[in-house]
Image (tube, rainbow, N blue to C red; front, side, top):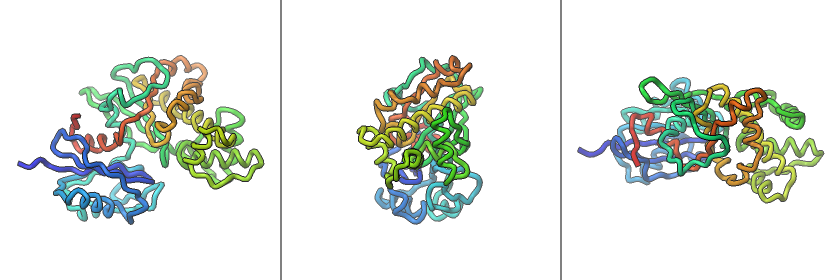
Length: 322
């Protein structure tokens, strides 16, 4: 019999990544990244991808998407796509179409990511069988985690922790947040710890310096900061890493994440050694009486390619084996 073929996808506000899974233990293959702006909806993007693959017969699919899943109708937070899951399933001709939050999918993939694809930032060793925390700045800010179950499997968290209120850890951050609040009445963690967050931080810092902010992209803010060519961008990136450390420490405390904190998303893995020298780890542990609780918890930056595709496959019941 022909092995069943499944479609898996990882959809963010900027890109949609697609792959095929063959059999019950197959790994994602024929991966292709498409800009979401090039397609009016997810079905068009999926059909375009499948045509590139020769229009295989696909039995079912799973999409990890940067959005809460609250029913059949889905409207993306950081993109214009809005669609019915059931109507999309029918149009694609699948027996089943599963939508999961992208960071829920990434959380499912964590135990399968090789240590060679992780870079540790501080801490010691993870506690076996303890909860795991996950955070990741990209177009938005994803937050999830894993809890161990009695049968040895893992239970992922499907939440929207990126939208918690951002709090200041010092007077300078209070100034920055107050400046951002003039435009955004609710300054969430995502407003400052994400791609848009880098731009928002730079703009606020420029205004506080009585300088006219330029129309910089997140990539331009990062490039200027790493090059040391713009002190406003340099402060923005330092503040970004510090705030990420604070929110990550809050998450680890909330979940009791002795199994480690994992940092994904599209921004931090590109920072390389800079991130290790940044205030991230210091701020992760800066929790007063509970600094000693956090200090042994390891943080890992995820360098694996498209791990959410693995998580989407696992959500379908596939057990990918390298």
